[in-house]
Length: 147
Figure 1 (tube, rainbow, N blue to C red):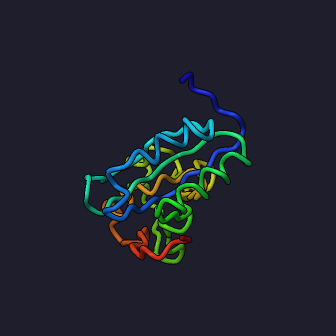
Figure 2: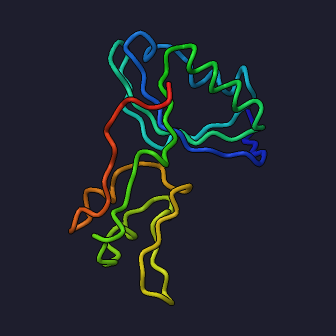
């Protein structure tokens, strides 16, 4: 399948129960709904719980159909925007997180000398939460996403 980016793009965090983790539900997004996907992070083992951060691209109506397909298959879907948080008052704008951020969701504004966080670019990889010296970046580990 050729890589087709069609204007709608969303990053989501998926959690899989053991009954689903061994099935090709993510591959079916491309096959059944003409969606492109990029796996940003994954921890999936057959017959075990799994988690995956996925960037999905395609037509918005097909995205909605694909999300409904995943939900019906038993996959829990959470927007990435609900997974990584920054405590604005705690951030000291040291910039350590910007060096590790693979999507450039965290970057230093050279004019203001402040670290800016663009949640819509975040892949929820968690690297920023490990490097932040004041723990201003946190990850929500609550698995009660929008099922």
